[in-house]
Image (tube, rainbow, N blue to C red):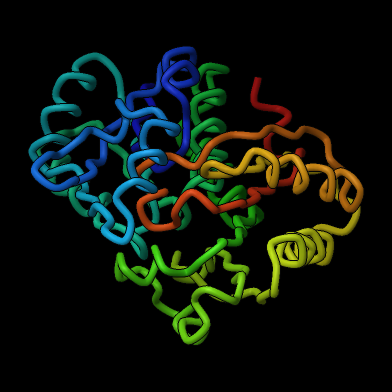
Length: 283
């Protein structure tokens, strides 16, 4: 079985290659130029994003034709499991569904999340497939991960979300874009952004994140993924808070991918959390 995803899962090229995961690109549209987000390093992207403010680029999902070509190339000899960014935040899985119409061996999964939450599902699927799990068992595990995982983050400013039209239900905070540090998570019910709280500073907002996760998971052993755009010092502080507050079984720090960073800006710090029990037996 071959696993397919998109670059909103925040895998690195090395991780994808090591696990045999195929990544469908999303695209960033700069003035006069469209760039494959999968081919752009985080620092190159965030430097360019900062340099063009107050203008921001836009993003474009893969076309149905791109997915059809990808599925045709990959699926000649084995079934495909294609896991994608929440349908509540992107039309990517709609394109994938259209692209799979003529394919007989593609199973589509709406992750109902993004970033580290999508990453957990993709890593789990790839490892389970390598360990010889049957498709129904993999799908059951992905559902369990989706339901148990949490993705929560804060932003130095809501301006990027507002400019990109992605502010949705966090619009109640929009009147204080430059002063409020929102704490936002992805709602499992519809895969869209929803408010958790707000702080007057990044340290306070990060405390709210740690408290939110402590309230949700208590003393469960957790796989923690700390994410940031271009704020390594804040990510390090966030990791320390989580180690102090939670039962951390594994902690990694990764970058927010360019295709997501368009909508958050470089000042994003976030956390993905999932019970270790759902990841530890996958091989």
